Amino acid sequence: MYAHARHELYFLDAAYSLLLLVMILQLRIAPLYRDWAVQWTDSDFGQIVIFAPLLFLTIDILSLPIEIWEHRLALQYQQSIQGWNSWLSDWAKSEGVEIAIASLMVWILFVVIRKSPRKWWFWFWIAAVPLIIWAQLLSL
Image 1 (tube, rainbow, N blue to C red):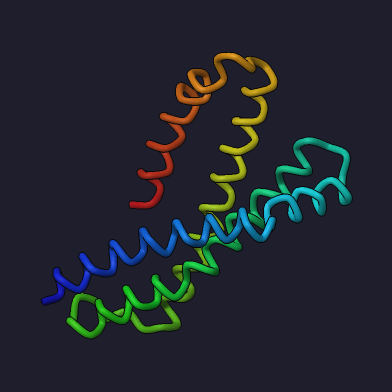
Image 2 (cartoon, rainbow, N blue to C red):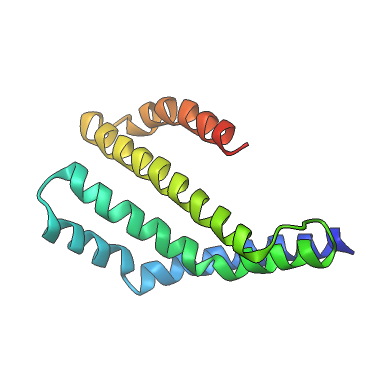
């Protein structure tokens, strides 16, 4: 029963995530964040430090209902004993780590695009693979 509920939640999460990304594009939230970043600083790095956290935090806060539902399921089926305060604290810590790593990745992406506009995808892949492995090890 728990596995069935998790599978349903997985597909619901995938559809909801896609809907969120479409909404962010349609509502022009990313360009709004970009404009704020440009207003705050002329530095490319500073703009990334403002833009990336805003975008990722928006996506993650809007995805919070699915995360809450997942934890509720784990509690209901006794797969977890973690209380809500502890869970929320862990979620906030993971957000901090995710935003730091994602901001670094976005900065690397923009540097690579500027340095190699034709083969940026290859050079970014080479740079991203070790960072993704490092992030996965960090999350264990």
